[in-house]
Length: 276
Image (cartoon, rainbow, N blue to C red; front, top):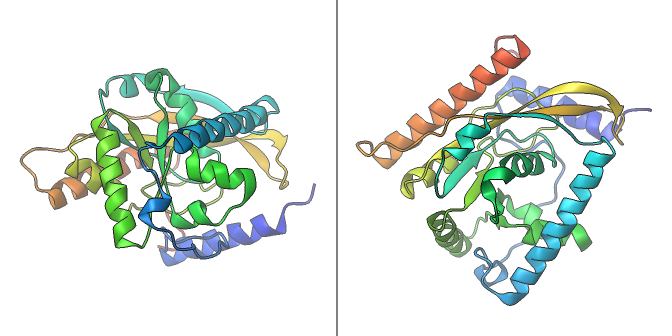
């Protein structure tokens, strides 16, 4: 099967951005986000209509990803360190590397033993919330997603929602690398957001990192399906004697160092970026 030209273009752009140190920039050709207001988002799923749509979105999303797993188009080979997740009581920010639309379901499926009746909430960029149609739109808007926005009023609602969710013991997935880079195996430098939120609301960060190996199965774009090894690492807690900025930087650096350690041990190579 010939490889997708679109994917090859994305991989070329990833290589270019790595060499330029543009680690948090989008490589996908997404349209700009359409504006939305606070009334368009029910962050804590209070409305009956939101509850119904959330049930449908999660049901359809689960059916889709589980079907891919059965067809061996999505392979979770192993989950390591579930005891680290079990040690976290109450709300937490979950971090993971972002390289595929399937990685959030790999995180959810790996954490399912500790979530029990709860769902994994996912912070998403605004264009993912506004730009899709049909079933994908339903899933992006209602599968326990928390959209970011350039609107101050929307972000006020976002932070109120995050505070409520963490206060009732939910787990919120935030991609600290920000942009999705297709099948990119290396950890990338982080943005502050996940760690600042954890500090402000005094909850731990639960780092997760997914490593990959080639399977012998081709995906629909002509690339080998990756076998996922999901690593759940010890939680990182804010320190009471540090201020918000100090805690944010300390937790961010510790999380990054843990990812680098997993990367180097799993692949048996030292982490290096392009020509940097």
